[in-house]
Amino acid sequence: MSKEKKKKKKRWTYNKGKDAFTDYVVTNREYTRENMERQKELPKGWSKSEITMAVVIALAVIGCIVRYVILK
Figure 1 (cartoon, one colour):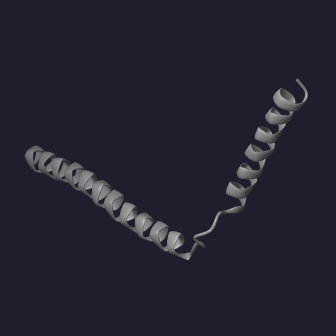
Figure 2 (cartoon, one colour):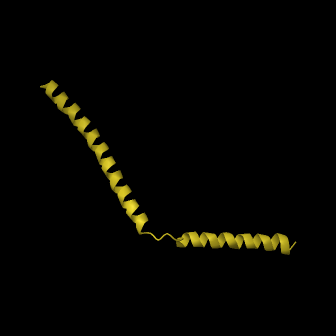
Figure 3 (cartoon, rainbow, N blue to C red):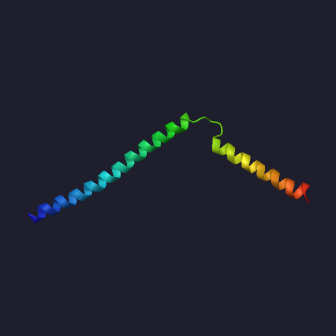
């Protein structure tokens, strides 16, 4: 009887690992598909955060030019 229990136990741990791995693969596939769908739905222009960053960088460059060139 102890040999049968050990076989079941080994087989059970093998199935747990296999189930965990297949679950990881399936979840990753679903996530990738959802992410690709989201990217297709997004407009191809700049997002609000990109526009904000560009404005901040432009203001910083203008400020540096005013400070070092005009207000020498």
